[in-house]
Image (cartoon, rainbow, N blue to C red; front, side, top):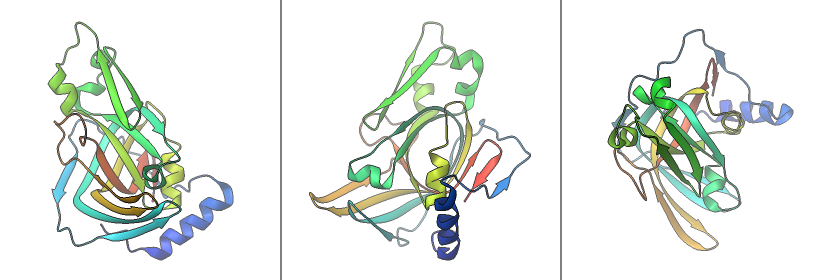
Length: 211
């Protein structure tokens, strides 16, 4: 959680981004991202909370685990209007491991709606249902600043992305009352509450790294 308190850098990126409405690239990398490994997760003390205030209310963000995921994007969905979208305007459906293999990927179709993601796989798929569950995820992304929000909105299916930050819990106060939103801390769960909520501090899209 090193970049949460880098206020000056956040403001600089916000100014630059607003001037051209396009995300500013921090670095261009020459290496290729590997989607072979599972996401990295490490629990942290829940004493680094901070507050985000926006047009929908006031929200306490509670990091619960450092998190990094390198994966292929298979679906992108933007949201607006509700308090959740004021924090997380874009969801990414991500896959890694053998799911990225073309011989496997050709058997599976992914989609998103209503903050959920769905998949269908055909007869002859080389992996079973449990493998798909444990090697794919729907991710509610909270960008740490306006530059990252612009970068997030540039992501397209087929991109390889690396997102670093933290899984978080959220407690908020809106005009409709108190709200909460909790990230999953497992990769093998399904149903309500199984999505990851990532406070993103850096986002790499293919070769471009954004901060």
